[in-house]
Length: 167
Image (cartoon, rainbow, N blue to C red; front, side, top):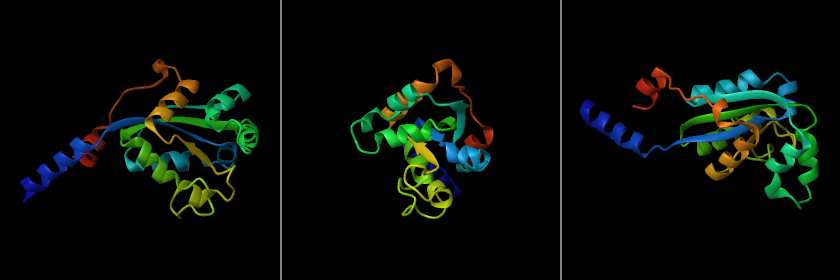
């Protein structure tokens, strides 16, 4: 039986795609002292924090980040908000990281975000909703390139995740 369980786990791990995604904590999360709490959620899930920095986002960076929303009524409000204070940028890596992070973050509208998600636990409004998370591998790649150079991203693995979480 143990051999069959191990084979099934190996088959499932083979289906897992190691991805890299981009996320950042918005000014309200930084100002409320939530960086450690939220990063801990990602790490406890088994994701690797492969790059991070605390910055004051420029207007130009915010406009590039949210370019897909240009022309929408909320675009300028979003740009103004994310440039209003320091933000904590993260590059996270792991199996199906884009989907995993989006699930941990919760619905964009925190009023309907499930309890236990970052937005469900820490946000009340749609623009200051605690966190941003890329919604696809393509957007993650584009977004993280606005803030990080390839040499700022560290490649490593944790023996505990390799031994206990992924097998």
